[in-house]
Image (cartoon, rainbow, N blue to C red):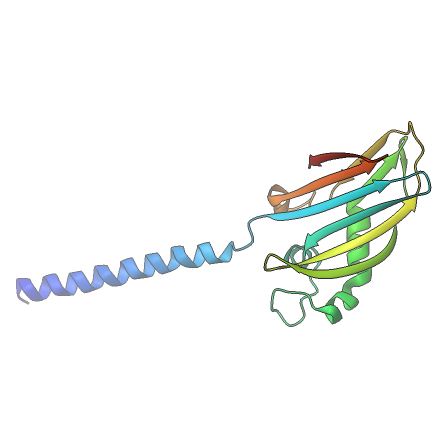
Length: 170
């Protein structure tokens, strides 16, 4: 084998290896397409009734409890209907509102799905008894408390009471 043929052979072989390595790295970056789950919680408190609106992208729901039967990374209305009970339990188990140290019972009113910024978002609305002035309130979010997804989850919380708003990120 001449020197030129050997160089071309080695060059082709190295090019093949480099393409293989680059393919591997680009595949890995695709597999982490959902780096952050962000939820938005709005709590409105009155003395008659209080409302919690919890919104989360449907891909996070799929990662948390499944339900994507046709494997298209979205949840349509029929898939939401099929997992409504499981979704309600997941959220009720993960979210906790306490008033004066007593857990408040959440009652699901409805679930809606909207398209926001190229993402399907599920919003669950819960009602609970009203709270009186002077009660201490604590809100806990343990949706992704267990597992690897916990480090990639945040919840932006807004609380409105007596026309005053308070915001926080958990």
